[in-house]
Every structure is written in C-alpha cells, then in structure tokens.
Amino acid sequence: MEEVRRLQPDVVLMDVRMPELDGIEATRRLMADESVSTKVVVLTTFDMDEYIYEALRAGASGFLLKDVPPEQLVDGIRAVASGDPLLAPLITKRVIEEFVRRPPEAARTPPPELAELTERENEVLKLLARGLSNAEIAAELFVSETTVKTHVAHVLRKLDLRDRVQAVVFAYESGVVQPSAT
Image (cartoon, rainbow, N blue to C red; front, side):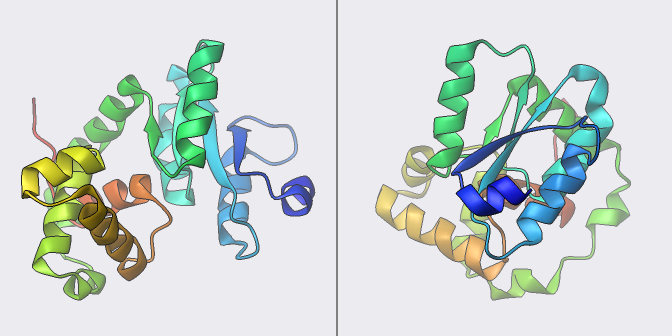
C-alpha cells in the first residue's frame, strides 16, 4: 500500500490471497484513497469465484487468471492502463451467472443517479454492459467514436464510477440491463 502511494504506478497486479491483507481489502483501500489513480488487476483462480464480485465492487478494473500466458498478461496490463476493462472470458461468464442468481427484486429499485443520465447516456450504459467497445457502440448508435467517448466519460462522471468495468457492474446491479438466461 505504501509503495503504491509512493510510486503511483499505472496498474497494480493484486493477488487475492496475501499474508497480511487480502487483495480485496487492499483494492478497496487503494480505490478509496483519492490521492491514488492506480488501476488494479486482480489475479485469481477458478476456485475463488466468491472473490470476483467483491473485488469488482471494491474497484478492480480487471481480472486475469493466474495461469495466463505472459504475453496476455502484458496485453491485459496495457489495456487496463489505457482505460479498457479486462475480464477473462470465463470470469465474465461467472460474473454474469452471479447476477442471474440474484433475486430480481434486488435490481428493481433504480438508484437516483440514473436520473442524471440523458436518454443517449442510458443507451451507452446499456451497450457498455453488453461488453461493446467504443467502435461497436459508435456503429450501433450511428455516431462517431469521439462522441461515444464523450458519452462514456459523462456516464462515468455522473454515476461516480472509475471505469467501464464499474459501469457494467452498476448496470447489472441497478437493473438497467438484465442478463439473459442462456
């Protein structure tokens, strides 16, 4: 924690299991510190599903499996550093399955922050939640990528979210989108 504050790295790889402070609590503390702009990528294994959701809520920008090949690890770090979310496909599937298991009424009461979004920003949030890139959102809405980037920035600011991963979590938790059962 002290080294992150001192060095201000762009990205930290965080292991969930650490001796003195677990990775979820460390992520939570880093994200709560306004002087830290570092993004966190959590390293996990399949037997740690219960931690994935909590780490997302704590502010992690992505997840990689511990057995990821080195070149994918480097690509993932670069993606997160440039502001893109990072979820290994199997982890994405598990996160969505977790939302499917939650009772629908938990997602029925929309948070008041949603009222701040324009109709277009709501559309962008829904497309973000589907995992579309800026280019794909631009094609879907017949606007430029620059316009999409502006809308994404507005969504993140108005909802007080750090990144796209947090926007996806927010969209599912608030009931803006519902996962399909397939």
